[in-house]
Length: 142
Image (cartoon, rainbow, N blue to C red; front, side, top):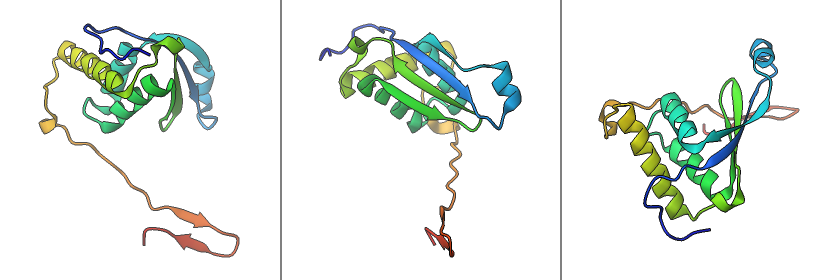
């Protein structure tokens, strides 16, 4: 692990495995689960387009990946498993955050996106949690 922050954007190679739920047989048959190598910047670009550039989950996903080495992201219809290709790519949280921010700024500049979250609204859905017991239903957060 290196303690110095990178001066220029150094892309990191990842292993990515995408799997589709069994309930989506058509997607599962068209896209069989396979492990592919991708660049960190291309995954950040994909996730920015999918969940927005200022989503806090985006930061958490990639900083965790760079600090711990792997992360699992579950979407409605598929699951992505990302892992660093080489253990030498692990870095301290501060360096991981700086690298992520540099890549995000670069991606946003190429996509001609604004620098502030003023025009973006994030939709967050919080569902009530139910615990089903054999005899009765217990409702949390009442």
